[in-house]
Length: 558
Image (cartoon, rainbow, N blue to C red; front, top):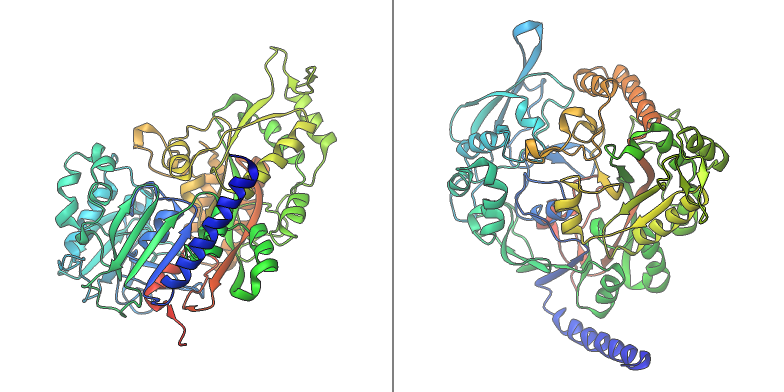
């Protein structure tokens, strides 16, 4: 088939889809959401992929989370415990340490989708799973800190925690598991990741307590959600929500314009440069919101790679980059260069964090010093053993912007004599296997999302290095281990004085930027391209996605 025929067929397909889309939009009781990634798992406590969080936000929610105004609120509890209201109380522990007892009451009306009440039996079981070293939960830290759980009745429980932190009432990582379904699957904890009903029986209504439940799942393609009849909150508008996965962002945009999908998830949709171009061409037809947020695009480095283990090489790599030129040319300067993991939007951001502008001469000197002081015929540096300075760079396949950034990085590093080999994978493989199990040999490009003043313990503390021995629990994918960083992370959490905490945060950012366990790129702004008829979508600018309020989504009156 020649190019003209292929193009004609593509145009005809778009026209047909557009016509069909116009017909389907008339009822407005079905919402089709497009996004670029398919969840590697639907278990809320295993792995930390945004695609999973986005889908489950409509069906399950954690005990607490942060709202669009950046305040912590209850999702599954009735009242947020505080020291002021007496639901949180410091308590003395052995060795002169101070812990805290925090009392939560589950929503009285909360029921799983099969009608079974959500109770403290689910709380006790979830904690049992989380505390088991072989369960493979992503955030094992929150469970390790629970010294004991005191069950008051079917709805009320008290957690006795091993330390009093400034986030003493945050249970953002506690996502309840239905004990009546999952207990049998946890019979062998080492096999739980493979046996969880969230993946083997995903449409079981008893897995979900939120406004929607998963009604259909086509692995790698789409997930269909329908209202949960046992949801006692505000009745959701849509009879059906279809999450359609289209990994190629150009195809995602085409499907939006054709009417095959109604809305692209701002959190997992078009990149900023695509959003800017889209707004110029089609802005009058949509409500477009460019939302800056706590999204940190970066390169995780495999610090067990002998090349990257050398801090001089890591510093040379960042000095060889012109990150400002990348954001200026690709994003019209709307995505600020990152000096560390802390966004200037967050009050803990330290302005005096070390910064790295491009300096090829200094980069070259550091590489010479590190033993990469000769160049081959092709310009790539080699060491005395004749080994090439060659690294693999991976990211999510089909993400056009990341692929463009890869190419720019590859070109800039080549000027410094560094060879970059690009190899990408579908998101569900990249996050579900390669990153989680640290199978990337060089660098992995992706984004971390965080909440305001969120301690990066899981990504930076040495106790959270993911290994086969802990069933890949944790999120320290770089294998970074720095005793000073460990000390600062511990100190920040237990410092209740805001100004003293600010000073500790500044030290952490300075140490991080000096060590460079990752290469910071920029802080993202996500384009939310919302159809004019859709209401209630409120971007948060942090890690908690918009579907946490999906029951408020609706259709504008005609």
